[in-house]
Structures are given as structure tokens and as C-alpha cells.
Image (tube, rainbow, N blue to C red; front, side):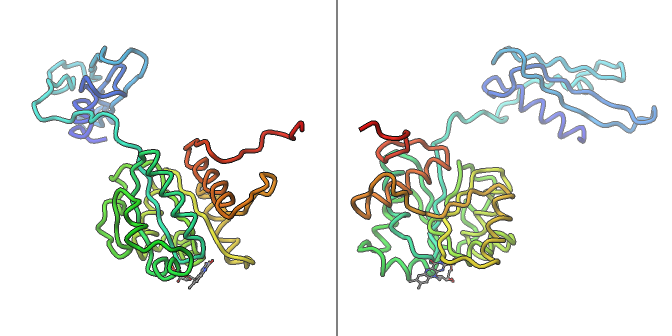
Length: 274
Ligand SMILES: Cc1cc2nc3c(=O)[nH]c(=O)nc-3n(C[C@H](O)[C@H](O)[C@H](O)COP(=O)(O)O)c2cc1C
């Protein structure tokens, strides 16, 4: 790490409200081969409590100047911890059949007051006309923020936009293959790519039947890369009475994969006693 970056990290972590800076900060200089050429290292142990931040900057060269110790006074306007942000999900709808799943998911997320960022592909807009009585505008109104699939400058195209995961529901075989290769030719596949590179949750509600070798290979690859492959296959042990029951059960399980535990759909609780 270069010295200015190490020094800046120390400044940042010493902010009293920064939740991770709960230990000792150590900015040390490592000399390479006895020459003045040096590397800077920041160590942050998280042993002590929040606010008892000790910047025990030591330097291996022996001289104890403020510049070398990294013991830098906080400056006005420096980084501040922003506090908790709302829970946010990116929801993408592609041109596979299954728009009712996406609609139900958006309704539930709205009720849970989870911030949703919605993007629909061109073929999603074509397909939804056959599958639902809701118009495009009505579906968009369920989301917190909307984007067009062509808008590659949208916040969700960047890893710096913080969110808690993404779901592509339904996910066509075309979008699946684009995500697998990292092609990122539209906002959906770019946002999925970014979600994975940032190590966030990605659930792909793939829809096709039967599946060929290419589909299966793409799914296996993405599964190994960390995505959740979720074919919306109904569970009949819940004895669904309506199509809505089937959709609700699948959507509940989709939310499980994103770490959101909701009630209101049946889960397997062992054999019934009655
Ligand atoms: C009514 C309809 C249903 C479709 N269902 C599927 C499907 O279940 N799975 C799939 O992979 N493609 C399906 N397609 C084809 C996709 O819409 C097409 O491959 C499209 O290029 C996908 O693009 P997108 O992923 O950008 O939305 C369907 C198309 C139509 C018109």
C-alpha cells in the first residue's frame, strides 16, 4: 500500500462513528533492503470497543514525527459513517414466461417497505401483456425506482451503489447465458455481473423446459460462481388450491434465498399428525 493511501485509511478509520474501527490502528513503515524505499501497512485489530479507538501508530524506522506515525488529526469534512441505509433489492424481469411471480414479489417487498430497483427487458414488456392484466405502468408503480434496460448509466450498473441482492424473475435462457459470460449487454445482465463481483446475493428464477446441455451448463457455472439457481417449481405437499397459492409459495422461497424470512406461505413442518 502506498503511504498516502495508508494514511488516508488511518484517517478514515479513526472517525469516531465508524463502526468497524473498534480497535487499534497501526500504520507501520516496512523498509525494503535497508533503503528508504518503503511500504506502508494499516492494521486494524477489532478487539476493543466502539469509540475507544486508539491510533497507536508506530513506525519501524524509529523516528516519531507526526508524518511518520500516521497520527493525523481529523479534518473537517472528512469521511463520516452514514448510518444504516434502507434494505434494497434489485429486481429484474426478463422475457421468459412468469411475470406473475415478479408482480407478487414486488407487492410483498413494497408491503415490507423494502426499497426495490426495477428493470424490465424489452421482451419482458412484450411477454407481460399475455400474462397479466396489469399494465407496464402499474407494474412499475410497485417499485421504488425504475430503470430502462438500455440505461447503462443507472446506479445499479455500478458496484458503488449499495444493495442487498438481486433477483432476476423470471430469467430467460438468453439473459442466463449473458450473465454466465459476463457479456453485460443490457442493464439487467450488467447489474447481475456487478452483484456477483461485489459478492452480493443473486437469485436467478430461470424458466425454460425442457433444458438442453447449454442451459444446464450455464446454470452449473453460475451456481459455482455463487448465484442461486431457482426454477419456480411448485410444491404440491402444501395442497395449493389456486394459482395464487402456487405463486405465493414460490415467491416465499425466493425471498428465503435473499435472506428475507416472511410468513404467509406454507413451509414444510414434517408429516401432519391428523
Ligand atoms: C410469450 C413468450 C414466452 C417466452 N418464454 C420464454 C421462457 O420461458 N424462457 C426463455 O428462456 N425464453 C422465453 N421466451 C423468449 C425470450 O423472450 C427471448 O429469448 C428474449 O430474447 C429474451 O430476452 P431478455 O432475456 O433480454 O428478456 C419467450 C418469449 C415469448 C414471446
